[in-house]
Image: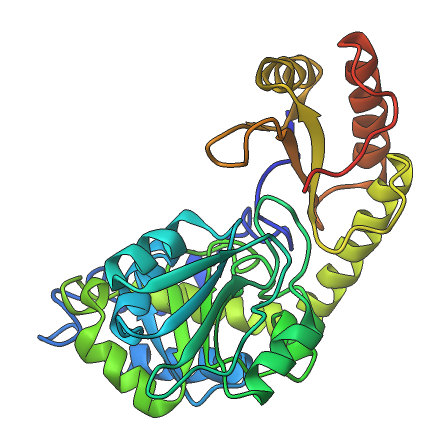
Length: 344
């Protein structure tokens, strides 16, 4: 079975780092970071992750979901103006609900039209750099304009972090420093946990006000060491080699599927539409040795069921060629459109 639906974009998930970890590393942090679970190793990793995304400081969380549901309510005031992309991750939606903010849902891909709030309110744009179910990128020009006009940006780099030069996310790769960057570490970094990076003042606020940080046991020191090890790989020569292979694989699969444009990310959602047809397509691919999940509402809008195909540096050219052939065959068997197209 070959997987074409994981978030292991750089192919690091199968690696073992146990032999590289200090033998005396403890398993548990023993308590919340604010009680006695803090360590210099936690702080050093936070500084390194902040530097990766161009920020002053960062705060470690147990997961990307915990980061978003903790940071957003801590940062956003009820009177703030908030613009949230229609396809934002559930954790961001839940975080905004907890913030009790005035939220304007913008159509996917649209930018806030009015970024000049009336005093004393501020204007937040909450979005993902690479959207997890559409695979497209946020507009760098729109991000820069929003910031230039005095707006604030909360950017989730879950599916962008590690994919660009030096292991950076999309924003850093284009010289943009958002107000706040969320960086989940279970995708390209093949670990677990997440961080939220920002200015030092904002990071200190999160350490005292983000409930999912304050009331959670600190990350395991073993996990901290594993993330540190992964960071050195992602940002070093090995990461450069894996990124080059990944982007070659992305272009290769796009060409084999006959897509009009080279995909913008490793996520290539193939439109099916009907829920049952999407499930059946997934089953037929599974029978042929390919693991691809069918994604249906409410994860995606009604009538946009899709196969969420994702590419990894671990895929070989022969994997990609055979998968593309079988995907076309399955579409033909089910009477779906012969011309494959990306979902949005």
